[in-house]
Length: 298
Image 1 (cartoon, rainbow, N blue to C red):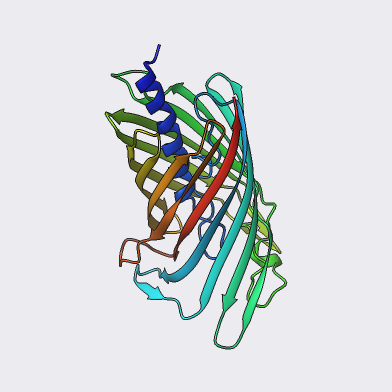
Image 2 (tube, rainbow, N blue to C red; image 1 turned 30 degrees about the vertical axis):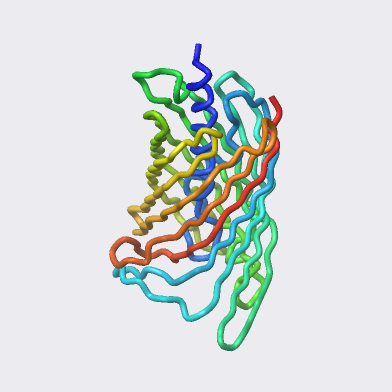
């Protein structure tokens, strides 16, 4: 049986890992790799919770992009994306849970000649998690979990855009399947976590041509501090790579989590892709914020 102090830490661990994953999820955007690691943490249940519902908002400003030669070029136009999400999670086994997130995307693009705003529903995300061992459950073994996810092409892909600048593009047009393995542990008040994930984007038909499937690998590393009131502060990094494209990107985030009471909690933070030569390739570079509020039931 966990001691009160270890139990308190375990709840904070789950909170820190949940918002670490949310902070680092790439948002759906044209010419940007979509939703790597979507199964990591949106709406993750804490140890004592049976289900929850919540809302979140993410804003991303495109700063520039990496070319095929890995050189960074600053964007001459303004590209801002705002995404709101409705999500819910349910525990169906003692150590298993499932989550559903429905995003709504708005894009603002401005050039020297034109300004355009549009959007719509994005790609719906379904994820599941099974914890073989909870973090804090053992002093010698870390928490270990299997993570899986499916992203459905409910958003509008770029080839179906009806706007000149493509601001009504809200999805990739392809199913995406992901499978990952997470490890978490605490050392006094320090939290460390790692999630390795493989994502496969299925082939799809675009007019008379078939776009082949692609594989993306991602590695999420997080280090956090757990405060006495169970608030958490975490620094995270997500590195993604698509070997066949080729594409790669490193995203850093500083985030917080704050339990308001036994039923309500919030999380938020700032993130940015690193616009440093050779770190990225064939990817857009963005910076932004995220914020979420959720209510749970035990």
